[in-house]
Length: 527
Image 1 (cartoon, rainbow, N blue to C red):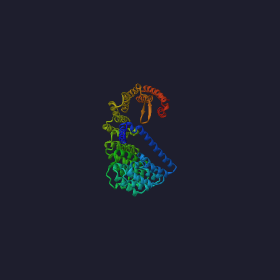
Image 2: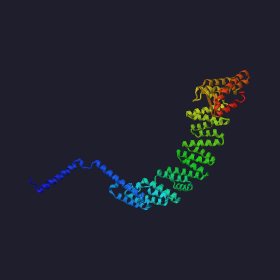
Image 3: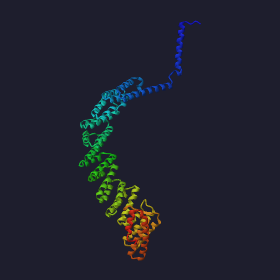
Image 4: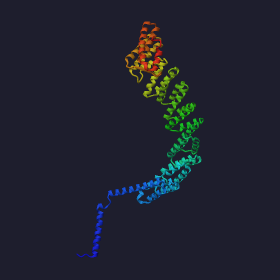
């Protein structure tokens, strides 16, 4: 069959069109996912080999050759997604050759054209300068970064302002530091600037540069900053400067400003530092003065006030135990938590057991605590102390009345022991020996029927065994019977007491303190 060249050309064109059409319709004509992954893997290997070459050249101190490889990689469109990695290597190589001017220029240019690359090396120049103590160069670099044309992101400006201020302080240049503080305060919101200032000036104080810190604080105070965050840091740092300088004359006023200004949690933490510092320097007079003022003026600041109350009481009692009832009473009048006052009451009560005047006054304070307190644990504890106080001061009518009403938290066995004991002592006070003997016997019988093996005395720290208690009371009964006189019954009671005491001595053999006391108590009696 004869086909003309023209017809053949038309047929060829049709076939080409058809072939192209098939390519479009056939899925296998596009690169497969496997091929794409293979290409990406090859590219990844190529990039890693290039970076390894850069690292090798830099390790061999061939930084110029390394820079050539890096620049070639940065110019390669295939590597565009990895530009930040190569840019990081470029800056490192420049800084390694002390080409900091070139590094800075490259970074500033990157902030305009490739901000991701610039962010990757954000701290590089600053860190290099800081390691070499080139603080003036840090300030120059910060100035360049903060320039409007640089386009530094807002989230990084705070860090640069901090670098700038820190450099001025490292140079001990107060004038520059004041200027940099002004920049921090004017460019950053208070919630960002205040912590930066707090940390920076606090570091100065901790580093022994409280004089410089004081000057900068006065500069800030003159600006009349209104934000609470600034007012808080100004009063707290001023107090810290006063303490660092041991300027005790200014300490009360500086602390008063903190009491007025600071929130509860901050005031609590700072007051601990303040009182501890005063105590270490022997200024308990200022501790007492400041803690009292805080108790009555830090209204609504519960944690701080409770701490100050404890300090005020502790300081006063250390100097004169007789002030304890008065101060506890004053705390209640100031509406300090009765739980807090109850804790202080519990803490000191038995320490005052031998001072009857104080114990009587404490019992009166205890009644005030009970009248205002709803905390069950506090109420129960204070009631027991008042009961013991009534016994110590021989106010037996009060003790009997309290026991007959019942002491919360104490079981029947405890009441069965306590009530006859108090009644026995009341009978002795009223010179009713037979009644006293009867009640002491009732007390001993309660012990004999109980499962209790010992009783701890909080005033002495001694644990008294059952036999010790029984022996002591049998001996007491013998003495009462001798006074009647009733010698026959007294001798029986003495013999009974000796039996109990011998067992008590055996039980106390491994307790030196208890054994010593028991031996002294029975000296001459067991012969």
